[in-house]
Length: 289
Ligand code: R5P
Image 1 (cartoon, rainbow, N blue to C red):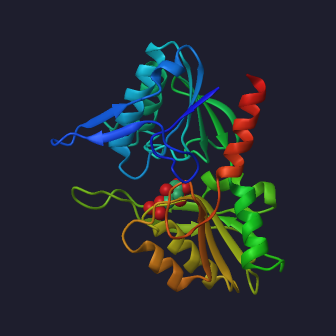
Image 2: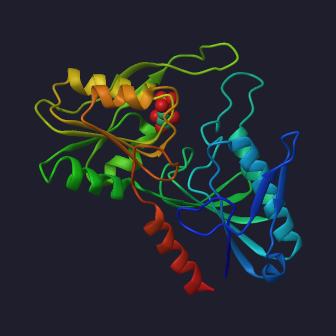
């Protein structure tokens, strides 16, 4: 088993070079390519920020490794485009599936990722033509809340929408029902939250709101407001992936008691390490090899 990575310097010493040409195109080099020949390879690749460049660079690396007859496992904690998994308006593209097909066609045998938006559970799936193993960070995030935020006082776990059901229900939590508005904006489009509904009594209780990701923060902010109105005591916000666009982290910190994520995407609120969970996976890959 051979590990290669261009950009996981917090977990691993990078051994793939990525540079830029003056026009912005990517230069990719795998100095140890000779050692990879016909080996099973695990490719660790963070795909955010700069997701468009990173995805192209990933495809370039996979293509070369596949040409060297390597079996390539890609380990990327956050899969970009995973929220574009449905066609709602005529002519829209299900970009998540296109990305998965590109990975599969280029030579990725399996993608291992964390709380992938379009997968509604943990375990093995196929999306488009790509086999995917989805690992959940819900338990480590809930454990962090129990120990570091609520100091072993009881707390309720809620998810802002039905997509978060599998994150919260194993812990006895409740997923709300979220209705989004249509797209707003000009060149940059987004969708506000219209309503949140749920049948859970939060009065006087500590609450952990848990989601797969915080992007613009709209969903989490609305859910904090909903929980406050329902009479919640201490409120903590957590997600596997923290993109925190604009000043959403500041806003969330101002209206809640704690905000934290994993370090799947490096950000100032990243408190829960993905390393142990990936390490466990890598161990099982090693022992299976
Ligand atoms: C959507 O269904 C996801 O689970 C998240 O709730 C959503 O992507 C968060 O996005 P934002 O922070 O922009 O509301």
